[in-house]
Amino acid sequence: MRKGLVWLGAFVLSAALAQAEVRIGVTLSATGPAASLGIPEKNTLLLIEAGRLDRMPKGVKVRFFILDDGTDPTAAVKNTQKLIQENRVHLIIGGTTSPNSLAMIDAVAEAGVPFISLAAAKAIVSPVDEKRYWVFKTPQTDELMSQAVVQDMVARGFKTVAYLGFNTAYGEGWAREFEKAAKAAGLRVVASERYSPKDTSVTGQVLKILSRRPDAVLIGAAGTPAVLPQRTLVEKGYKGQIYQTHGVANPAFLKVGGRFVEGTLLPAGPILVAAQLPDAFPSKRVALTYIAAYEAEHGVGSYSTFGGHAYDAWLIARSAIERALGAADPGDLAAFRKALRDAIEGTQGVVGTHGVFNLSPTDHLGLKFEDAAVIVRVKDGKWVLERSFR
Image (tube, rainbow, N blue to C red; front, top):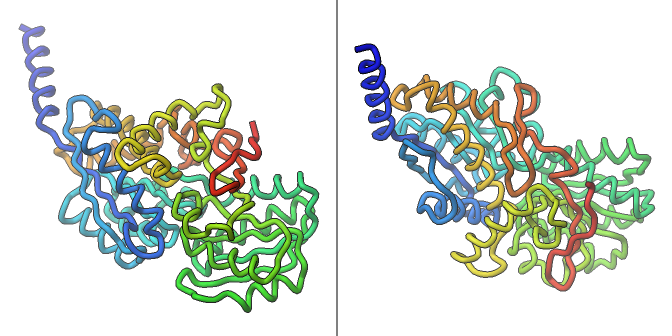
């Protein structure tokens, strides 16, 4: 009799899960200044939803609700509230840009919904306080990538450097982390300028930088708006080394920048040059599998690191969903949100396109520097591996 009851209970639970639905809300910058980042993120999640990139968790249906925020933090917050209140999602993925992701934190924390950001700023997940308890991310932080840039600058013998970045959370975060790392390494920061992603001229800022004659200039920007300061530097005759951030690692930057971005150095996730990595590199196989699936749908050379961030978010989410199903029923919204949050924080050994994710209560990114960063050069309009840190 007891065995029969146990079997019946297991059958009922299995049947309930088979009918359960996990709802994932997504808000991305598919339009606006960050569209070149948000479009591959959206494309990646659509491939997953269609079953052409990865499997779904066993025993449950996953449904995506994908919204466009137009690269506007206010719209990102409105989308977040809609996804939480109307669509009653269990998890949110998105926030293409740092300003958008930072703006979304209050809404997810208040509602108790786990959130995996696709933006770079360290401040999105650090420190893990009462609000960031609910927040995770997949892109390398500005702090991590600043280390890569500074190590490369030192290795090349540079002594003086300048910074020109966005006047947004992304640009300010990069300025803070880069200047801190540069000074610690003995580099002298001789100029630090800002501009808006919507500006059409940065001549004044560039002339100030040129007057200081730096050995290298780092442009702290993302997407195609990062081309403007580099083009201006080249047109004004700058002969030093120009660096960009991992915020430009997509085909649109190469297309818009053309000859003006030749020779650029940038820190990037390993997926950008996956085929050039040694076979032992931990994320190479996963990255190549992702690239093949993405290019089969969107064409050769269409992949970017940003789509990879979205895929990594899904890999973390899928693993967490499978584990959370043993702790709570998706039909109990609050309980499953909490179970899913706990499962995400407990992620260990998930191999993504940008590295191996090992999260903890104090680390809501979980990437190791040597596995998550490489230095890449733009050569003949292509990405070429310049330096690895393993």
